[in-house]
Length: 155
Image (cartoon, rainbow, N blue to C red; front, side, top):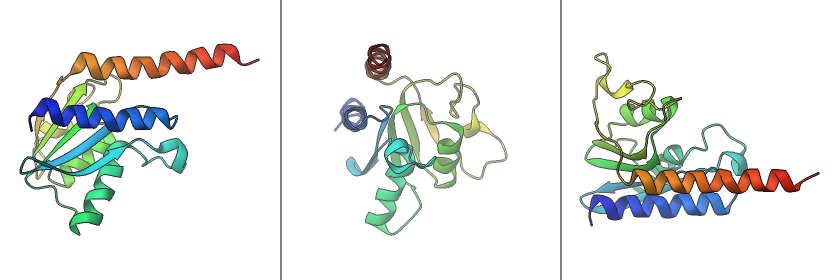
């Protein structure tokens, strides 16, 4: 499979999050060309700040592998990871972080801050921004367009 196909799988996770009323962010973890874990936002349904797609992905991966390390693992996520998620992916030693669109307000991979390049880190994942940027951004925009439409209908 290619980077585009892996991002498409992350977008499927984002669609499932949106269908559940969650902000549409999805992620997949890939090792040796195979998806080994998946995650999607579930902040609202879990009522937990760490219900981000990347944390859900890590929980899935840890359950499946019994290991918290992401060495040799590429992470595909539809939106640039926030500071919290970026820090986790650095500490877990992700090989690459590939994301759809940048988050200039709270992105931790260069959008707002570049935590991955901090010289004090023990690990420096490669960052690949803007893969399928238009498609992932449109998915996000559509979700919030629908949210605004529903708010207008309510009294």
